[in-house]
Image 1 (cartoon, rainbow, N blue to C red):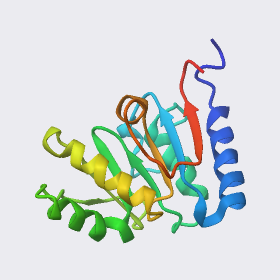
Image 2 (cartoon, rainbow, N blue to C red; image 1 turned 135 degrees about the vertical axis):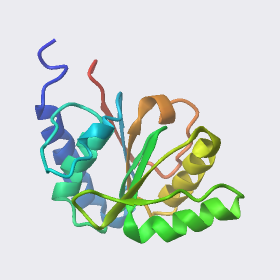
Image 3 (tube, helix red, strand yellow; image 1 turned 30 degrees about the vertical axis):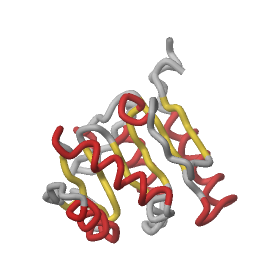
Length: 167
């Protein structure tokens, strides 16, 4: 029970991320699945949230990444992508007749933007983000197992981390 919420899991995930990035370089296609989004961890005050969740894990990896490594969050209610990918994602959504989301700058890192996902575009967003992942534009996806675990087909994935409170 003590290990379920242990903050050392963040360090272990960061270690796996760094090891795989060093080993695979541009070929890295890492997926981290977790139970919660924890959107409130997207903070302007820089406080670290040690609970397991997509945003806290993203924040941990973002703080140690090079900024050009295709790190993103893909959840049913939230997407965070590198600013360099924003135009490409917008074009992909527009070409499919989908609404182009209003991107909001990350509160502390101008290299990233985020947007809230609505029910009407969720499937399109998942499909376009998966295409960008398979193409290597995005190389690390942190998401919720509820959205990505069953029926999600990311053929390029070569590393999977299950970051669950029950594991």
